[in-house]
Structures are given as structure tokens and as C-alpha cells.
Amino acid sequence: MGLMDYKEAWDYQDQLFNAVLATKAENRTAIPEEQQPTTNYLLFCSHPHVYTLGKSGHETNLLINEAGLKAKGATFYKINRGGDITYHGPGQIVGYPILDLDNFFTDIHKYLRYLEEAIILTLQDYGIAAGRIPGLTGVWLDHEAQKNPRKICAMGVKCSRWVTMHGFAFNINTDLDYFNNIVPCGITDKQVTSLAKELGHEVPLAEVEEKLLRHLAGLFEATITREVHEKRH
Image (cartoon, rainbow, N blue to C red; front, side, top):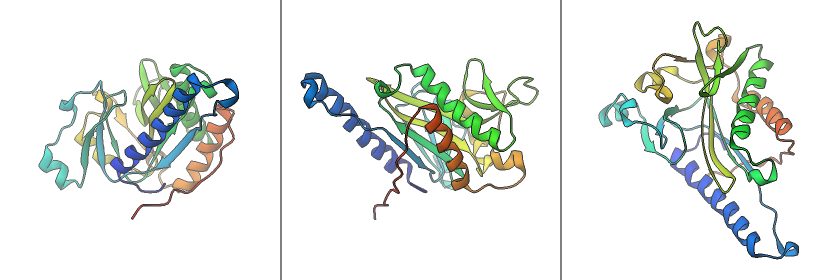
């Protein structure tokens, strides 16, 4: 969907999410022959500079005031996903899967691990070893020795009746300076990084998206039908 206003993308997710829930609700009272399959969506976009705070987060982890946000050209939203505070901006791949997990598996922890695994495999394509840190969601570099652990992908999801929304933010060519205005994910003792920083050069977002799509399709055993979102004017 390209660069898309955060609130517009959130509203679009909400529309798809509620449509899937409505189909599931109708199916519960329909005879088997009249039940409709639910549709699964995977949205890719990036956002203008924005900070978002999840339900379990603390507003004190936003380190600038309204004037500071304006000076940075950034906005701030409290949202209904899990997790604490994070940053979205140009140069990120933000992925929003709206999936009916009844079509795959009904296990939210497995779902999160699959999202993480797709990022890990994509980084592996670039020769970068990444993984998980026990007790922390997302994808990390130097996750084993933890001499300088740094997060390259944040995650926060919502799930209702096994339908998901929100998702992940994968730092590709991201301006990491914006993370200095928050305590990322509420974690004070670890750094944030990007694919460009680790490689020493920028990488085309479309190239990374292709690799990521391939890994997500493989993990979820899904066939992906592509569609370009038409911008509203």
C-alpha cells in the first residue's frame, strides 16, 4: 500500500477485521451448505512518522511532549494492540496480517513465532543471524551472547475470535534517531537497529518485501494473491 497515513491504515484494517468477524458470526447460525469461507489479508505499507502505544504500555515511555512531536513531524496514537510503545516511519516495512486463524491453527503464540520466523529467515537471506530473546517479543540481533542485543523488528497484535490485526514493524532503511524519543517497547537496556545499518547500505523495500512474502507463504502454507491498494484522494 506504499506510504499510508497511520489512522487511514488502522481504519482500513478495522474494516477488513470486522468483515471477517461478521462472516464468522453469520456462519455460526448458517447450515453447512450456506457457510461462507473467510478471507485472509496481509497488508504491507509504511507510515509517516508516528508513535503508537499498546494497551499494556505506559505513556511515560514517550519522552517528548506535544510540541516535540510537532517539531519532529510526528503523531501519537493510543491503540488496541498488545505491547508497549513503538515507532513507525518511512523506510520500514509494516506488516498487518488480518488472518482468520481458524484457517491455519488456533494458537496465538505459534502465530507470533511464525511472524518472527519469517523475519529471521528474511534476515538470513542477507547473511544476518537473528533470533529471539526469551520473554521478549520481536526479532533481535546478538540474541545469544547478548553483548549488544538490538531489536530489528517489533511486534504487537490483537486477536478476537481467532481473527488477527496489527502486526510487525521491520526496520529496513529507518531513521533510527526517532527511537531516541521513546523507550522502545518499554525496554531500557537494549538498542534498536535496521537492515541498512547492519549492512552499511540501504536496501530497496520491494526487494525485502518479496523475500518476506515468500517466507510468510511458506510458513503459513498459503498462496498469496497480490493486489495494489488504490490510494484515496
